[in-house]
Length: 133
Image 1 (tube, rainbow, N blue to C red):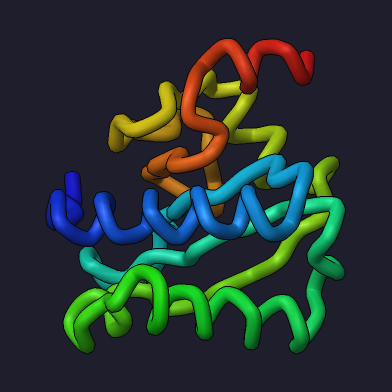
Image 2: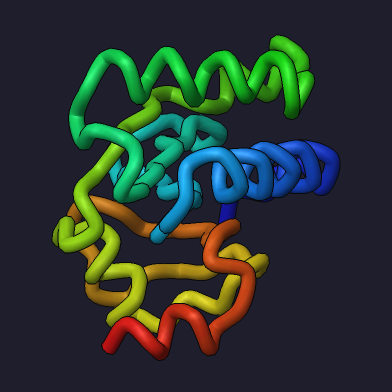
């Protein structure tokens, strides 16, 4: 399983907290590893009622937060292959919730054909994830 540096997770958590504060109703902030991706390349997925899904504006907002709030170094930025703003009911978020990926723990997705690992950063607790079902 690909390991993510603890400092990177800490920085992304800080970014998620700021996004949750600025863009109320942050539903999801996390990383997924695509099955066909290089071992250290991850997609950052974000879902909020206040971010337009699939938009360039949402992408610019998240990149700005990664740089200014998270202060992610170049190595960590390179690990993020894609940043995608998703609607709250997107299949990928549902997949992660269905797999019951515990927040803060790097998990293997057992029934995933597109993604083999996930790390949920937000919501911060499993009770928030369970409350959506």
